[in-house]
Amino acid sequence: MQRITVVSVPVSDQEAAKTFYTEQVGFKLITESRFGDELHWIQVGPADGEASLTLVTWFDSMPPGSLRGLVIDCADLQADYEAMRARGVCFLGPPEQQPGGVFAIFTDPDGNQISLRQAGSSTGEEQGLIRR
Image: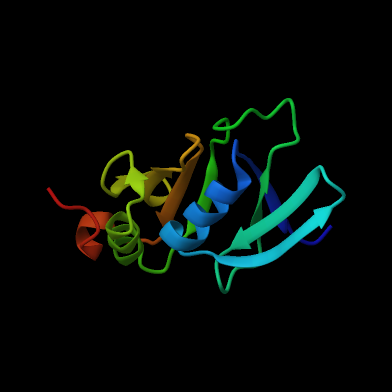
């Protein structure tokens, strides 16, 4: 095994999710294909990332909005946070220091929660990421 390449994100409306992840989050559309009348594969991800997300509707055991714990590393979390907020992305709160780095959690239209993280040895306050 070498690496994780695709993570499934359960959504209720693939087209709406594609619009959210490409226009509001800022991901690029990597692949979009149809397989027959039922399977629509939409894959999005960071422009320079190795892993990507596929926006799925076909897993009964993964209802829309059930994703938790996915972490996306950022080189400049504050800049990403501000840009995404300006494009209408809803965050649970501002960036905050937690074990493992500074985190900011956003939700997609279905309620899936994805964490942005900036790791580093200095605290978020020292990096200007946490405002008090």
